[in-house]
Structure formats: structure tokens, C-alpha cells
Image (cartoon, rainbow, N blue to C red; front, top):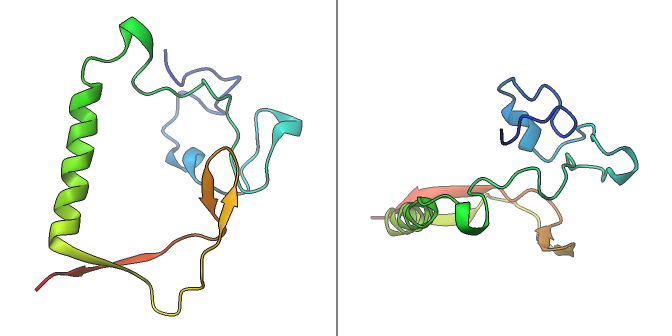
Length: 109
């Protein structure tokens, strides 16, 4: 079953949402560990699957995420927290922020 491989996920059968946080968590892959990131095999977590047997609800889930984001933007003004430092991008496989990004959601008038 997805995400239940003890070789990839410590305490795979337990509910441990912290496993996805960017912390000084241990890695299952020893020397592949990157400080600040819990390392998993790139294919150990594919929530919708791939190929012909991929989840039929994937498009629905993606549309729901877009809908929820659009509703947030419609109803809230999003700003960085007061005194937040300038965030610089870091290049990895994808761009990542150099520091955590803390946002304030202010109701629109």
C-alpha cells in the first residue's frame, strides 16, 4: 500500500504528519540527507498514482484545489507578515524559498 513501506517511512503505520515538515528530521537514506528536509525516495509518495491506473479523481481534486485557492484570494488579501525579511529563491530541482514564508490573510472589505 502507498506510504506503508518501513524502509521509506519510519513508523509507516502511524499517523505522523510531521514527517512532511521541513525540519531536521532523520533520513531513511543516510548520506542522501539534506539538512532541513526529510528525505524520501522520489517515487515513495505519488498520491494519485501514474499511468493508466492513476486515480480517476485526480482532475476533480486538482479543480477543487484551484477553486479553494481562488475563493481564498477572492475573500482575503494576502500579505507577508510585518517585518518579514526579503525571501531569496534557492535553486534545487525546483525553486524553494531561502526562509519560511509567513503570510497574513486579511479579510477583504
